[in-house]
Amino acid sequence: MKFIVIGTTAQRAQQMEILTSVNLVGEAGTGKSCLLHHFIHNSFKDHSQHTIGVEFSSRTVNLGEKRIKLQLWDTAGQERFRSVTRSYYRGAAGAILVYDITSRASFVNLSRWLADAKALASPHLVTVLVGNKADRDDEREVEWAEASKWAADNDVHFMETSSLTGDNVEAPFLLVARAILLAIESGTLDPEKAGSGLWEFEWTTQEGNGPPKDEEVDTGDQVLLRSSWLPIFL
Image (tube, rainbow, N blue to C red; front, side, top):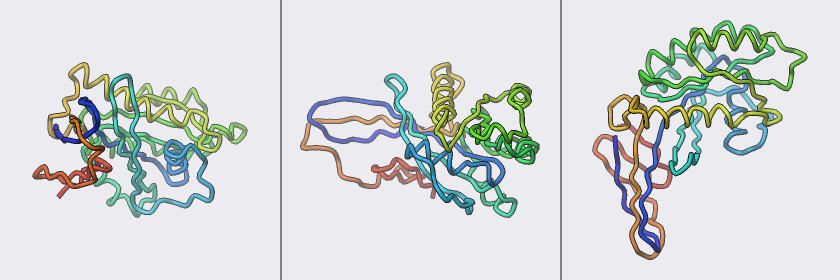
């Protein structure tokens, strides 16, 4: 789906921006919220509590001349919120599947989380398996080799991170963005096709007196807030 929005700057320019939805999924206590917080704010989230339902963040990343805005949905890991969080999987183009390397219980349920994500997301879902809390290697219950094999068997990317130290925290998000961009360029993913989990914005600027003020852009089935580019489904 494509949207064309007019704004104003001192010189004429044109830029394409891709908006995509990415879910963080996995058991409660694996550090999904801390991982996301470090990616957005470049700092560790002290006194983090379990997510209730779903929390939203976003960040735009530049890959060459392309800009990809990641809509990031941090979903609760508790069973009682499963029916709520599953609704946010619908149409997602990416998923970051998180487990705790010090908790084998968080690893053994990965297949269920992956199945849920694939059932409702884009047919070409890009998935990255993340073993979090790599700073606690002396407490490790899941070996790197075992997790790597699981990822290979399930055709997903894999890496370990530490949301405490910040080690590798940007990598899974950038990997999702790059994989989505490559899929678009190869023709595997079409942003204009319904259910792709992608929206494409053609930002056209004209001579004028500065940037446009925030306003709603009505596209019929969605309303876009120009300040955040967050689609609100009606």
